[in-house]
Image (cartoon, rainbow, N blue to C red; front, side, top):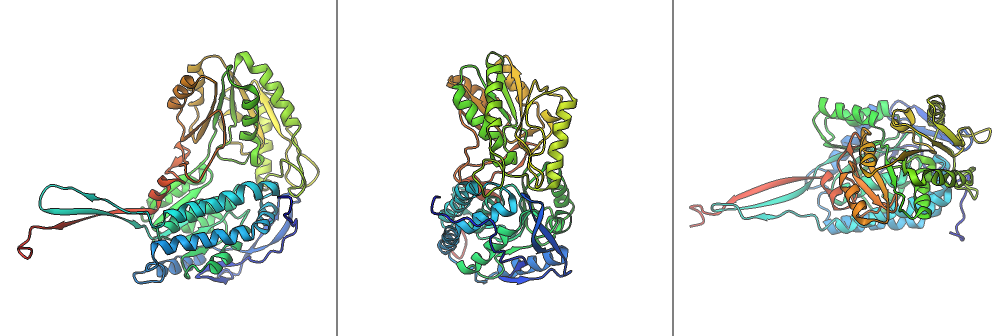
Length: 495
């Protein structure tokens, strides 16, 4: 880290649409601005893809997936080597990619370099190892038959990723799809397209055949809708808000009933019992909410603290929040700006609602500085379950702290949300930890830790937090079809 040279003004090398290993202007000729969230100023113009461009990308992907194509005849082990090569190139360009990610997204560059890039690279390497280990079974059926299953690639996979972890979410989508032998049409978030486009050039350098990976930047209402509705896309994967997830599910139902996986919003509870190691609980709760400017789907935004330690926890949490250094992502800071003006305004509106509905704001709650989209770290105490800040996903640096008395109360209130993405439990009593974990309606439960995500462990939600699991062996299920083949053995020819 000490030897890295981060550039707050990295050269912007690629801004066009990537189809068939070639760069193209949008069919319409339109472009849209990519904005630096630290200043509110334009970084560059990016080609604005829409339905016409998605059609071209899908055609290229279909051609790359045809029987006998370079990709379909690539050995599974070679697919793994190509993915390792891509990971090697990302490591080579890690400082540049970190700078570009922080310029476009606003997260501290040290976080891009030490968290986002290593996590993305590790995801490619993990699934590269799976490429030649995806196989079916032989099944001992009744009668003179031999039956076996094949796990086959689905085909053309449309992927729509969010702006909070641009490279990491790309890796979560690309890596399992490629390991299984699929082809890809990706729409990056319009707020943060630049690192995805740079990775396309690394795709060429790594040696992937044309048409295997295609990237169409553009807006969700046009390019994203075209991906969701396209009759020749066989599967769509989306990470983002529950509101958009509903639209995608509707589009899937009204088009070709393509396979779908959705990783959506969250309002995750983080439960701290009075026997917990308070120092550890405070540290993890702090990171679980304020990491990435609070822009995490799994953020522990509802912190439930047992009444006997509530006042001490609040006081110490406020002191930690006040000590957070907010500023330019390329300086020595902990918190950068929110991703754009719309998100900035949404967070401030929800903060206002917390004040008007009677929560006790202990710190923060306002803009930081006079330009860019910075918000001071904010903590509310005495929060009630009926308040907007208790129910709506804020996706910002706002911690709400609730008071509870009993274990059953904590479980019931934790489960009262429409979401079910993640949860945390802090206690020294492992029987209690396991009891609570077993009764929480969440896809991931962390015990005495938070936000511990690895490429080996599945991630996804219950209820309105989505469907399907990414990462780990479970993530392969999203990108394969299971085919059953039954062969008659007792035939006249065999006799």
